[in-house]
Length: 275
Image (tube, rainbow, N blue to C red; front, side, top):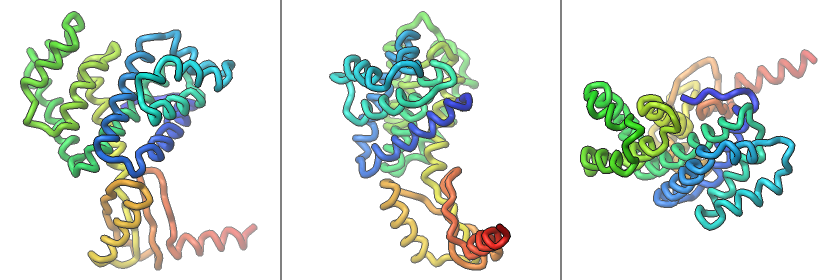
């Protein structure tokens, strides 16, 4: 799980909002392609302190940052990834290194979205956890993948020999990205960051619906279809019954709440009368 400073938290929120826009209506393959392009850009940004400073320097105007991004990546990555890099460069960061952490987060979330579209996001979470348990149980595997003297290609071949055909395509891509993107961290720490990013995306795609009475299966299906259309990808609904809401409905996506309950409207009216 990444821990960001105050300004960087706002930067990550802006990036995740921009990611939602870029992923809306995208196919699974397009989500994977966006993730791959973001990881490609991340590798370059993470390896260059000077580039990170150039992209995060608040004294540098945004247009010059966009020129730099296009000069470096314009021929290497797609337009959606370029736009997200532009969003990152427009944000303020508590430290230059945190732009890399945030880009890693949304790259993993893009692949998690591909898994969600394939109906496999729960499987990906389970398989990443299983991989973490394997690292604990098999010290030789953990040492081999943590070995900085060994090449990323050899590590990738080792992982493919163990997991290819046994895990979902998204899981295999994420494990390979973990190996290629240690950035000075242990494989355990990197895998933990990736697993938290997948969980964050999964939580964002689960709507907790609170009503006074139980919704019928047909109502849940209709609501799920409506939310899926708004979000642009499949949404799973968890329903809660709470008589205190009186009527109406509250929908919660992770930290975002859409409150249309009668109790909320009465509370708002009471506050207005008290002014």
